[in-house]
Amino acid sequence: MGVPTIHYKESAFPSPEKPFIIVVGMNPGLNEDKQNEPFVGPTGKMLKNVYLNSMGILDSHVVWFTNAARCCTPGNTNLRNSHVKACWPHLDADIQKVREFHTVGGAVLCLGTHAVQTISKNMIGKTLTLSKAINMQGEAIADNLHFFATYHPAGVMRSPKLKFAVAEHLELIGQQLQGKVPSPSLPNFVPIRSPK
Image (cartoon, rainbow, N blue to C red; front, side):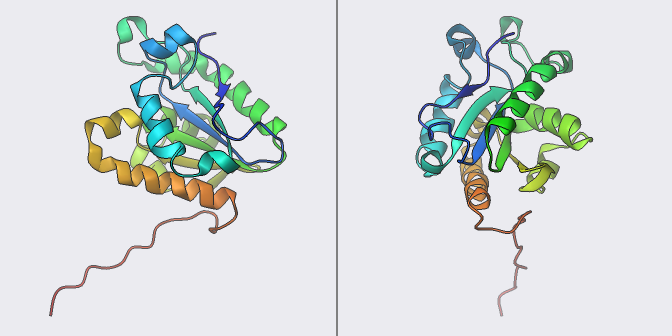
């Protein structure tokens, strides 16, 4: 069955009364495959240390880590749609178990294109691009389950300018699950004014 969905031990203790975030990545890398745990490689460390641990999300939210595909691809090659399709029943079952355990609302956070496509196709009914998904931040996709998307940490490592966008997206999740922003929340755009 591959690398399972796990509770991130640094986040709040799993309690039905605490809001939850299910973080969905692409697929396990070599480190994750060896340790049978998602997000233990370099990109996972970045996600945990730079974003989750430093933003206060972990004190008040139960975080669950999983992936669109459960197994490291042979030779760490590119992920194929057939891998994701084969793993969807396991991911779907895990999402349902987490939702049944918690009595309060939560969020699915999709990291990157593969996660966005998997969740949007199977839970929203249409396949979204990452840019369209980012514009849907906070929309309800099921009872007490909100949809969020951001760039995969591997993308941030390749293009550091994305790190601020990821921080803003994660801040939106925390605010929405604490009831501080209306649902759904989209950014307000201020028109550019020319100098006088």
